[in-house]
Image (cartoon, rainbow, N blue to C red; front, top):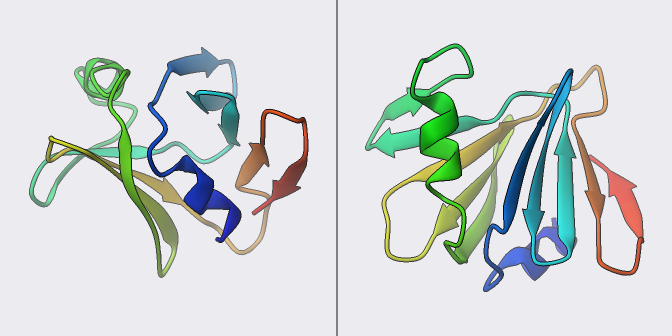
Length: 110
């Protein structure tokens, strides 16, 4: 989780939807996730990929700076400055969940 703290202060600069995964880019840091992130739009209101406003909610976070990255049981939470929306990256014990790559192409798997 320490490497994820490098995202704090960086902005979400791109969201890339690919056939069976999603990439979140933070000014040179990239999270490739094979578990679909959830987007919290209101307190305790989470949107999943199937929701018709999911992509809009996720893309609205582009250009927002990361305020906090926290590890909670079963997920990684990314909070942003000046907004209530958050991203939850679910973690499953039986498979690779997130590929983290930094701007120097160093990487690790969660």
